[in-house]
Image (cartoon, rainbow, N blue to C red):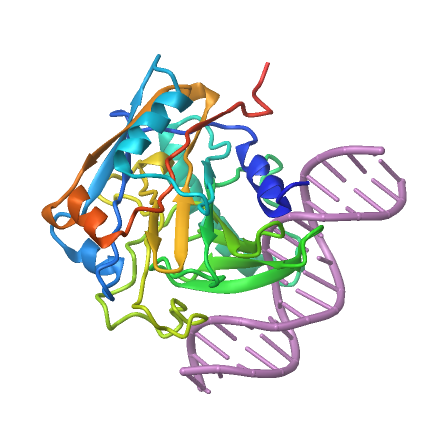
Length: 313
DNA sequence: CGATTTTGACCTGCGC
DNA sequence: GCGCAGGTCAAAATCG
C-alpha cells in the first residue's frame, strides 16, 4: 500500500465515534513561529498566545472551502505532507472524554497494582474506549519531536511492510494517559508520522527556554545547528473541564528542516465546512511570518470527511 | 541511583 | 479456531 505508515495508521483512527466539538463550535489552533532559537514554549508564556480558530459552520461546503481559507494563510508546498487528525469513538457525552482520560488512567493504575502478577491480563472494558487520536506527518530527520511534554518510551515494534519500527510513548505525567506513536513513513523516509492518543490532563511541563529537558531532541540529527525549534502539540485549555478534543490546539507550522502539517478530520457527524479564522498577535502578523519565511511551506488544512465505519448505515 | 530506553514475551483484535 | 499484526508489559540495560 502506498505509504503504509500513513495508510495503515490513519484510517484506523477514523473508526467510529465523532468529535465532540465544543458548544461554540470552535477549534482552537496555535499559530507557530520559530523565534530564532526560542521555543514555542516561550510563546506560550506570553499573556496572549497566538491563536487561530477553526470555526465550524454547519451546512457549508467542506473541503474546497477549507482550501480557500487555508490559502489565505500561506502557500502550500510540494514537499509538505498532510496530516490527518481524528478522534475516535469517544462516546457521546462531551464530558466523557475527560472522564475517560481520567478514569482510564486511574483504572490503568489500579490494574497495574492489582493485577500486578497477572501479566498482561489487562482486561479493560469489553467495549474498549479509545482515546481521541490524531496523526500528523512531519518532514524531519528527527524521529521524536519535542512537543513540550515529556514522554517515556514503552515499546517499539516493527511495522509490517515498513523497514522502520514504530515507537510507543506515554506521557510521563502520573495521571496523564496520553500516548503517542512515532513511526517513519516507509514511502518517504524523510517523513515521520506521529499519532497522539488522548488529551493531556495537565499543563505542559516545559518551562521557559533553557529549562528544556536535555532529552529534547531538536536539531540533534542536524547537528543542532540552525536554531532550536519546537512545536507544541495538542494542548487542552485547562480552564475548561469538558474540553473537546478538537478544542485542543492543533498546529501547522514549519521550521528549518522540519515541516509539519496537520489535517483535522471531521467525522460525518460534523460534516461542516470549517473556516479558519486567524488572529495574530503583533509578533505573529502574517507579514512577519512571511518575512521570516516561517510558514511558507505550511500545507493547507484539509478537513476530511470521514464516515466512521462503525457508525455508518 | 533514579529515570529512561531497549527488547522479548505476551495479550488482543481482526480477518480468513 | 488459527494466524497475523498491533499494542503493551516489565525486566534488564543504559544513561545522566
